Length: 407
Image (tube, rainbow, N blue to C red):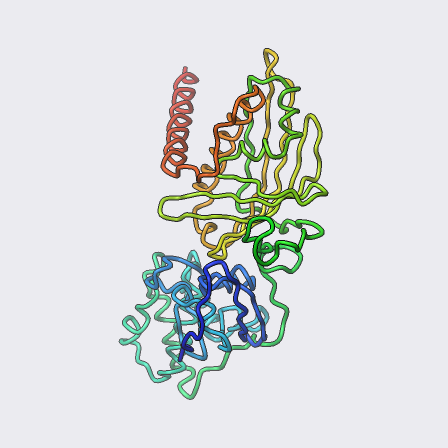
């Protein structure tokens, strides 16, 4: 595999067009220069068989073939590979006609959780293609580039050894490489949410307006949020904030509204910092329903690293106790790219904490005070610490409740 030398410098927020042949299909994707091949395959082309584990080139889960040779997809930038031919595990065999390696892995129980299996299959294919006469005693070291936590490797070695002996004259090639339509994990055939990387009136895209709609992906969201908060403010005061979109946006930690595009469309930024990972999403929001008691919107954006976020958010305000308001916020959040690598539970905890902070800021805004939330990213340490404290308290409540129920 020979990588082309870069011929020009590219800005961090600038998209680059890359042409590849992936499993026999010519594709052209437009993505930021820092997007890895693994993220491009998974998020931009929908080929989620390439698994992402350590993202440091150690575990081997993301192994694919680049111009016929095994390579770690997490260590390559997609822009390095313009003109390259990529084969992923999806191209190895068809559901009705598996590749001999896939059949052997099933026959010898060479997988359990299956997370490492794509990496082992592609690494094994590369090994048997280049060394068809490999002997069994050499397989443990030859396959050591992929890690497995489940099988103890014995079934994997048995499977590869069987295929090696059955195909000494040459391993059959990938059986599922042909032209097809590759579509990313976002809706309406788009690869990632449309880029909106500049403030209003600046840079490319400033005069492009807005899309016809923000169509959320089908299927289960990455995170589903349902948070209910008791506000001191009266319902009519909360309704006033609901009708003031700029004030409402200032209540969300890390959010900043940058432009009113008309027709209930808005452009803005949202920043979040999770430990060393700092994300700055630029995107749009479309208000679908707005009344004194209810506001519903869809939003989408992406950060310069190629990560994407889409969400459908609904907030309902109802009269509460003692003249206050009960605010219920629900959201389906779809994440792609590096932010999607955080565990669902952790990401859900942080998101729920942000909504709780939003409710407190909304309560202050409804009372006529400044929300006291600016555009700085919320503190990851504070968010995570609060989430951990909430978990400990919940466990203590369950334990106390259990002791009370005992006779």
